[in-house]
Amino acid sequence: MAAAAMRSFSVVGSGIHRFLGLTGRCLDLECITSIRRCSNTSYTTYNDRDPAPLFFEDEVQVVLQRVTGMDIDRIFRRRQQEKKSTPPKYQFLTNEEVDEYMSEARVKAESLLQMPPVLKERQPINNILETNTSLQAHHTDKYVFADITFGVSDRNRTILNRTILVRETDGTLRSAWWEERDRINQTYNPRPGRNVVMPKLFNDENLKSALARQEYEFVLDRVCAQCEPDSSVYQRVCVCVYDALDTHHHHNTLYSTRHYGPMCFYLAWNKRIDSLLVSLIQEEKINTASDIVYLYQLIHKDCKSAKLNIEHTQHVEFIKGYIEEDCLQRAQVQLALQCYQDLQHQRQQHQHNVTNAHGL
Image (cartoon, rainbow, N blue to C red; front, side):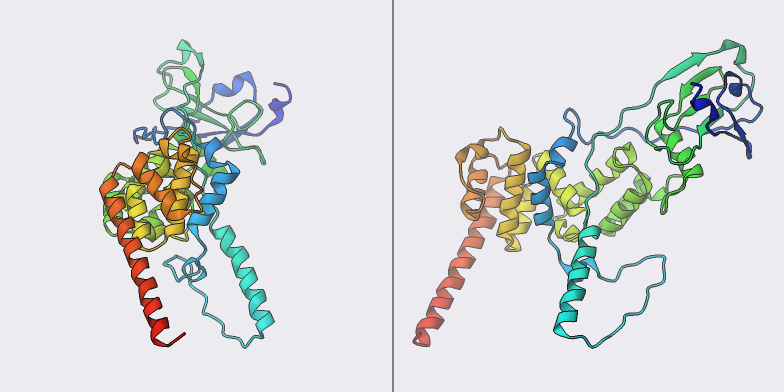
């Protein structure tokens, strides 16, 4: 406690900021704040199991990166943004210089495709430190005590890390709720692209409107900038976007973006890959479809199709094994795969006829 006594503390309230030492008397202050708890209800994406250990497995990461793809033109496409776009430069280059520039572009593309982590929703903070009835009704607002020491983690809340406490009007001293912590941290340690007040975009009505305009990537980028990946708002928004993509078969909208892998993981986790498989097979991405089934088996290791001992490099047979054992929309996926096989057979037959016609 003595070591922590020299750390900088701020008490926020009524537009006044006072910096105090961490002592027992720092709770009796005249400056008060009123911070309302976020009204968003908890929306749990991952109920019983923590997805993080599976998501960060090496094999799962390899599969997710492979299905995401790397379309350079799509990654560096022109996008709407607040910053003014710089005009393109045209240069005459040798083949060696072109290869060098392409290598640099691939490195930058890999950084742009870095996936946001998939985490379990954080648990609410309900840590009451003290109830002092002598302070009851002493003020009409609350005190917020925030440790603003430089270089301390915003997410930790122990006394040795960033402490944020709230004194309620009834005299209760408690740890700040997550929503309060986010606002105070953004006030004293602002992060680029993040607002103190939650954007109205994430309200149900505005979110539905944005999804109706198919602004999926914009919404996901915005929530990644605004929220922590284990916050209830982040998980609720991501679920809404993923469900809209799956319902309208717009999975390809996120292809070669940092959000494609987490979307595939979410669908595989919830055993809802059938619609995605149909889309991939219709686009003749049979390798990617096989990888999605493989991802499904990595997450659900006890599924029936995982016991068939079919190598996932045998793409068609591997998908057929999933259709027979685990598929929920068997007719749709089976029809898409049959059409793909018929198309491949017709192409082979056409190529054979052309070869014979030319006497080759």
